[in-house]
Length: 196
Image (cartoon, rainbow, N blue to C red; front, side):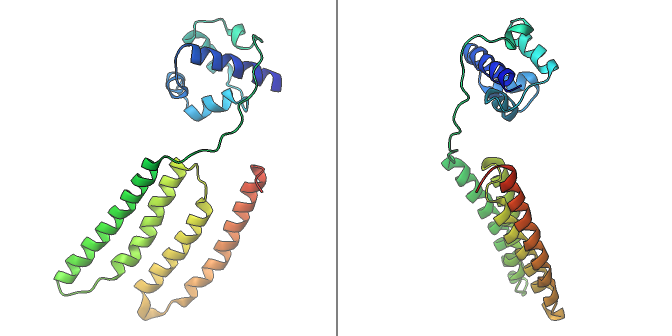
């Protein structure tokens, strides 16, 4: 099975690059994600027969060409993914937008004679949700467990401070099982992905 993956990967790379096509362009024609195409080209998975038929049409080759050995190919070494500076800038802008809204709410209440400092407290979990979403998109979820942990604590803190007169300190007891679940999920993730 590994040999078939390697053969298909080699042929797919040769045909795609020969056609001057990016992985994203091929993925769009196949109605798949570019991550799937990348996985096939790294010989980490096999496209199903319907996809192979569609590829044979796209590259105008017979189906058996895709599954037949033509030249030696080795899977590319995994490269460290570099984070584009613009993705960090967009993340910073999005989070700054959350804090701008919080400041706006604070000012509006202040102008009406009320001090709404809780607007800033509630901006923390909203910022962390924003960071979590953008981190999942651009960083492939790296460090998400830390962000989720901070998010849980910030939500508990926001609820506690919103209801300060009731002194709901018991809410923080939820942090203990939440931390245990996060720890176990992170451990399981590392085990499944062979990380140390």
